[in-house]
Amino acid sequence: MVACIFDGTIESFFTAVFDFYKGNITPDVFCCKEPLQTVFDMQIIRVTSQKEKAERIRCCILKNVKVEGYRHLLYAYRSCKENKYKIIYDYLTVIFKYGKDAPFMLSDKRVISFFDISRAVALECHRMQGFIHFKECGGGIFYADYAPDNDITEFIMPHFCKRFNSMPFVIHDVKRNIAGIYNKKEHKIFYNLDVFNICQSENEQRFLKIWKMYYNTVSIKQRKNTRLMKRFMPVRYWKFMPEKQDNNDF
Image (tube, rainbow, N blue to C red; front, side, top):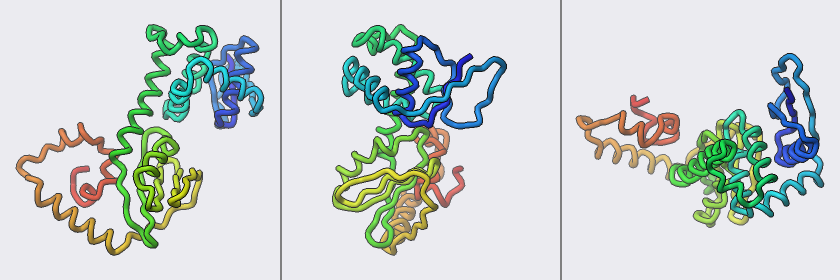
């Protein structure tokens, strides 16, 4: 059994892919965090990022599956699946062997597994573009917190920068402590930030009060269907919805 340990960056992962494929080695486990739970006779290979090798893998991917196919790979890389690195590696071996035909080999389990996780991330990106709620804070800055299943902040930031290009905002993934910050000119992604101290503006507090009043007024208690609500909006997202924070639906 072969286990690969790398630093978690896509450059180091591509370096590992280069080394394993060239050496005709089939890794069983990829791990970017130590300590690794080892088993008897496990061979551990530690890989450090090498720019030249990583670039060769990137160019090979782009040559065969173009920009759209590479974007699918980035989606899969941000998946929350524990075995995502192994799934991606197996799919890359298909690309290296069959070239441009690889994405269309939908009877191959390696291809199916790859697109399952890639599409799940893409779907969550689409959903979050319509779900995220911004709150007005002091100084005219808007803040939105959320806890997606996958690491998608990097993917959804361009959408909101284009849609709200006249206002500075922060999108904060509270599960991973990752924040995308936009200053009306450009955006950047920050990792492992300190806890945000959010102070809502008076205007925001009034708006939330009116919104909750409207929500409670139009809702019909006799026709309340919590089961149907959960089908359309998973409960794990409710804590980020103002209208759900003061009721007993949880």
